[in-house]
Image 1 (cartoon, each protein chain N blue to C red):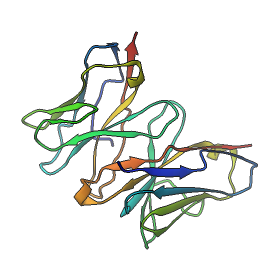
Image 2 (cartoon, rainbow over the protein chains, first blue to last red):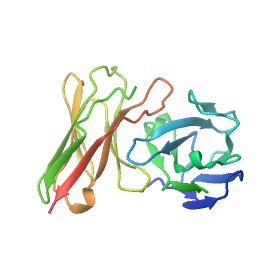
Image 3 (cartoon, rainbow over the protein chains, first blue to last red):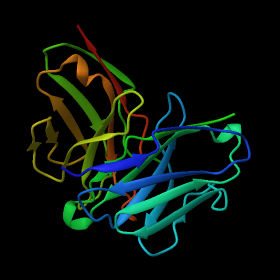
Amino acid sequence: GAVVSQHPSRVICKSGTSVKIECRSLDFQATTMFWYRQFPKQSLMLMATSNEGSKATYEQGVEKDKFLINHASLTLSTLTVTSAHPEDSSFYICSAVAGRLAKNIQYFGAGTRLSVL
Amino acid sequence: DAKTTQPPSMDCAEGRAANLPCNHSTISGNEYVYWYRQIHSQGPQYIIHGLKNNETNEMASLIITEDRKSSTLILPHATLRDTAVYYCSRADRDDKIIFGKGTRLHILP
């Protein structure tokens, strides 16, 4: 089956530092990757869509300079939370899609729990 | 706008079939319905998807009404490990999946 690896699973950092989260598709090439965040007891909120070799498309209300997304290859996308603050503490989840031939099924990483002190 | 409607929570006895409904009355003819579930503090897991016909895999069955305005996910023999939030979803025109609030399924021992 399709496997998406997300790293790290948990990170604790000081306010003002930047944190990078990696998302890799291990056994397929991902035409598109998505980044979500999730607050406790809430649903997943889409932050941005990432296509290999092009700029990410951000959802309304998501600061692109705050959440930097790089999708340098068909198997890797990264999300960098710049100058993190306590309000950025959340559960960040990535997903990858193999394309329309795969019926656009999204395969998710295990998530990264970010705690900003 | 999740464009799907699900009950917020359901209970099911262990060993019985869990039937989770979803309303997607505005779905268009070429849109798939996807089901995912999220066990506490984990990333969502793909379960099944369908277009028109009923589908079955090793995890579940998906029954789609003939008018495609609703569907039901069936877990044939629920176990405690099936306790999770179940999301019924559709992709928008940009192939993005917008998640609604889902159904929190409690499996009762």
